[in-house]
Length: 218
Image 1 (spheres, one colour):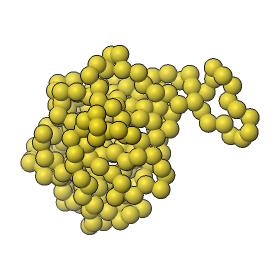
Image 2: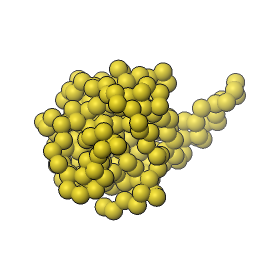
Image 3: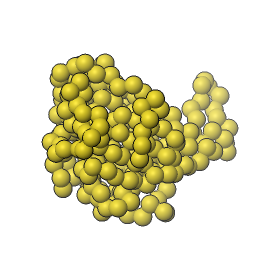
Image 4: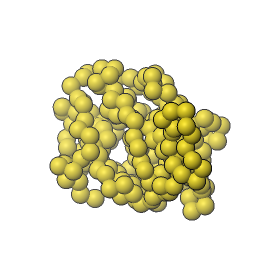
């Protein structure tokens, strides 16, 4: 994977020196209740699609407002130096997701080193549909999630650790930050609503901190 920095969606907000370390739990059917589900077979797993909301008292007509369907592709991740880049081929977007060091000091290329944490600057949710992540090569990863609500805070996030043997599905409207692989590179199957609307939170700008995700392997 080669990332052209001119193609990066959403320029990261930096310049703060505070972190909020979020708790790390293993992703299980029990721990994910309200957030999402464990996925065994991505081929048959249904993606929830949410009908377009009515703007007033007149309802959306039946058989309309939810016909965008589902898109899928490979979500590629690569640590370059101390910087995590990604490209979601399902929607054609490239990202700078985070760092393992303060961004002003983090190496942006070169061989990756050991990582004790990942500093994440942004999270979002999709009001139009759910999103599925399934590892193509058994690679473990971590995803920060928070329950729905626009008044979200860093304290509401939990890091869910997936061991690479199964996938993770995130319900519509559930906040999710960057998928962070433990390996230097990872490829995940991504399936999600084709409309792909995003609502985002910018942690440095809104709360003066980064989310700090522990990178303890399963």
